[in-house]
Image (cartoon, rainbow, N blue to C red; front, top):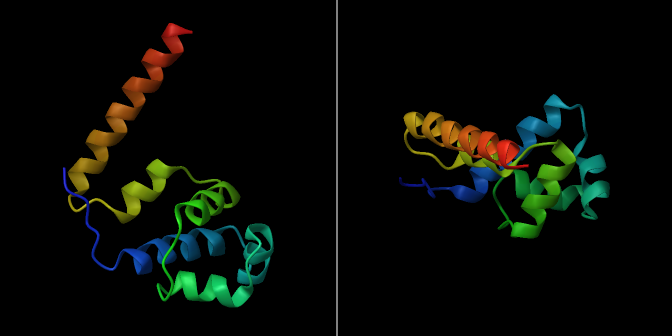
Length: 100
């Protein structure tokens, strides 16, 4: 499996902007929730600033998205790999539920 890291900051920023706007959250409100300025949010969403893992995780929490959602939309080179990873995750969740 290969991850596509070309223009990664721009692609993560686009993911965040897409899901922020789908939820009707302004850049200013997202900034407040992440303790960042609207200008910092704008720079992140345009790929002008590097993301920290902490900002990515906080953003995912605010947007009610998972790391798997981010990985599936942003990192995979081959769309078939998304389905394979999803099936692995579903199998893991099923096994975990049965174990409890």
